[in-house]
Image (cartoon, rainbow, N blue to C red):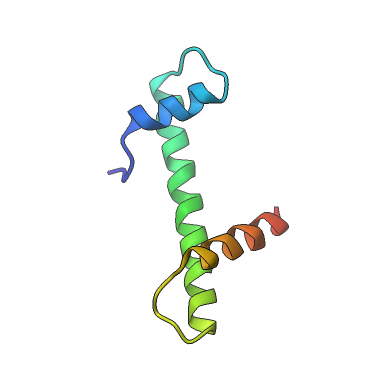
Length: 72
């Protein structure tokens, strides 16, 4: 079961320029977003722990995204 409803994901795809979005495209995008979100969260947790914190801050998320983007 997905963490994200497909309707908001369809709107994101439409904001990207699509006029119509198939159900399987929405479902696949949800899968991709969830996988990327988990990856970012894990990296942000590592960053917070390296600073001796349990709380993940927005700065940790930003650093995680930058770190992951550098790998891509």
